[in-house]
Length: 387
Image 1 (spheres, helix red, strand yellow):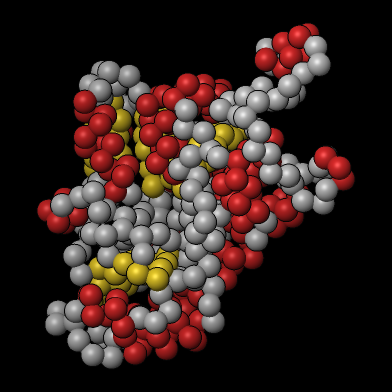
Image 2 (cartoon, rainbow, N blue to C red):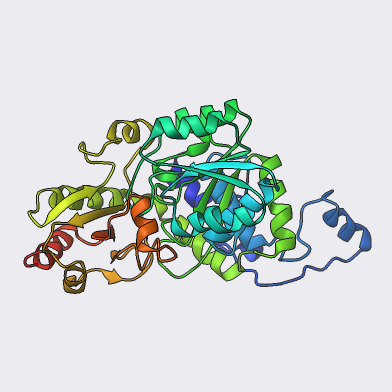
């Protein structure tokens, strides 16, 4: 079935208690059994059921099944945040003495794991320049246990060739992990392009309404179970109410992303022609360095873009003149959000570190909402009217 149908019905085809037409929110911590035998059967995975919500929960199960189907995976597990999904995955897969290869401008929190936390564990980290594919391939060829990719990147919307890089990672025996937050499973499915695992900050487009934190990991049963076992003891479980909100958001994901895609393309073309704008970063534009690759692996180009201002224009002035954008640190919501990397995606990094990642200080990240696009371009026009 199509993605829009699966987003509605996956995990819910067998019906709900009391004949409810909507999935239930089950906040229970524990689940009781009439007999020790039936309890043991569930505890030992001989029968379906739930024991304790730090392990599994009926509301989480619906969300995980929806994402499993949307990403074309064998299994999925949820987490308390996107960073919980990323960190639990990396800490499960890596040991002292292992080597990981990634790129320089991953999401700021992820980058901090690479530059600070993994080296403390004795893990060798090689960060290749994101725009230099040959450098990435050379680092992979040296050998690695994990290859971690993010495409499009946040906030400069760089695109990696997943088919080529995943094949290179697999050739050296690496587990390939891809962050698909910006693209969403509507626009891109990394597992179909060669990745072993795909992670999401579910707080963004998946939820869509900015009212629930969460993270998701999808992939093979073997690898997802390994991470699930780590999360089970680490305790980074998703709250059932947040799972309920994210799963409800998923029901409109296809509709929302189609609108995000359309609006972002219109806004990107508008900004590309504006005299106050130096550069626009959006993979849907033919001028994007990796447009052809993006077109070959994405069905749509996403709802987020960024743009840099010409000399003489005040970043703070432009941001503060916007009427139809929250100046806040998030993306992927139905409302438009705008901000700078220093207060959003890369607040953890210094100006020097951001520069090394290729992130200009005069950059504005603009997560395009589902408003009437003519209102958005008019708002940007008045905000850019003066320096």
